Image (cartoon, rainbow, N blue to C red; front, side):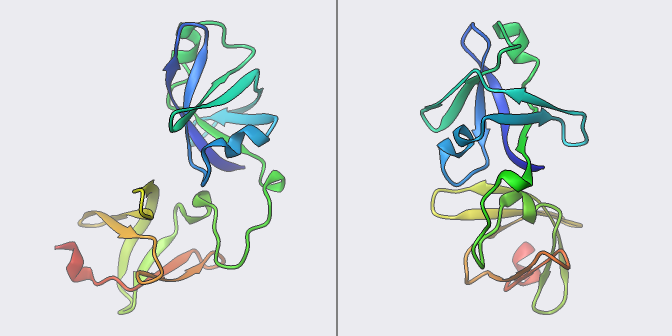
Length: 166
């Protein structure tokens, strides 16, 4: 499974939910007829989409088993995923956000800066949120800062000094 978004809130009175997509394009999730929803540690369940549309900078969707606002509010915070096999192959140097979560971030001096806990969209570029021993570090996901992403060994090499943290 690849996490593609999060249910952010209930939307309206008829069971619709507002979705924060973790995709490059807001409407990318619309292409998948079925989603899996659940908490990070599970359990997950497959769900069919009754309707889904772009609304401002988010998606709104309605699920057949979610008839009112009360039911929609119970879904808040759940993650949305699709099977990895249903995703298109990535080109060289492209990554799904979910592939970067949990990777160790190491600088050129061999110092571990921490682990990627999430990514943020800043408008100009994506930003890695790295949890280190001294707290959270934000590293722009740009070529000048990111030197290598090694998915096999679960390491991101960065041009980022430990001094930048202080």
